Image (cartoon, rainbow over all chains, first blue to last red; front, top):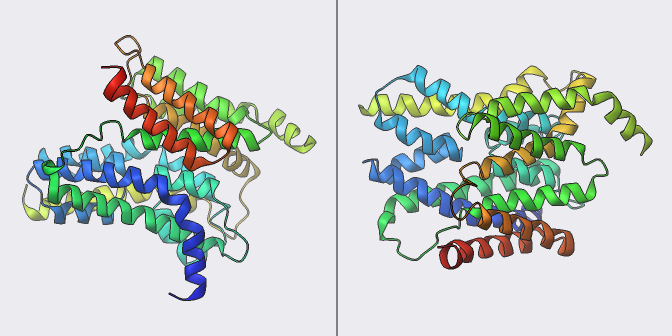
Amino acid sequence: MPLRAKKTFKAAFPHTIPVMTGYLFLGAAFGILLQSKGYSHLWAGLMSVTIFAGSVQFVAVNLLTGAFSLLNAFFITLMVNARHVFYGFSMLERFQDTGKYKPYLIFALSDETFTLLYSAEPPEGVRRGSFYFCIALLDQLYWIAGSITGALIGSRLSFDVQGIEFVMTALFVAIFTEQCRVHHNRIPAVVGLAGSALCLLVFGPERFILPAMLVLVLVLTLIRKPMERGLAQQ
Amino acid sequence: MTTTQVLLTIFVIAAATFLTRALPFLLFPAGRRTPGYVAYLGNALPCATIGMLIVYCVKGVSPSQWPHGLPELVSIAAVALVQLYRRNTLISIVVGTVLYMILIQKVFL
């Protein structure tokens, strides 16, 4: 490996360790589920390479076992993935100087990769573009490896890992806490948490995401003036 | 489904996924000045979005049924506390996850 690539890898890898744990197990869970519906590890691999979205791939298992409808598949995917639009908005500036890596970075913007890219800063001497690319690619490789392994060995896994999926929740909570600690302005964090929780109570677990996204944008828009005044004072 | 139908379905799901991720970049291409409002949202949204993701992770928990979301609540509090005191994301995540696994496997049966 050339020296620069090695340095980038060394800087990026530690950030991805929590995601590695989560993706290997969740990916395996996806592979096991897909295989139980009669699709081999090759299909699991193909889906993880081309789609790379956890929740959507679990939904896709149902789509692949149901009646053939491309329109249905398209709109269900948009619904399940709607929250990803926010990741793009958040990364508009950060991805600006990432050059040739940008298309892949946009493609690979999963929940977990977004959270890592938002919070991880490249050390001095490591370029932002290749640093981000390394994190995103490692994450996807874990996911691919997990899903293929799951489909291959499937139900032969016997040790008790019940609850391992909490590693993703823990990742989000840790980074959320860290962001609240470093940012003076905690209002967006509170709005996100409280607004989403409220929508979950009102609309229920299956349909709260779209209302929550609307509420978040609406509230953040309404408080823009005082927020920007507050930022200017700091 | 035939193999062609499966391939088409996977292709459509992949395209729709990419669309949700690429939409902001298509609407506001680099080089052109992003409107102040969009730049403001880009700054304010990430923290709000991660808050939303946490809620998304616990959406399946039913507080009215045993164990009343206690394993989640306790583990989330543990992650936040360890993060505040140790400021090491990896340690916080390991502590929270191991605690959660113990709670649901051994404590809240």
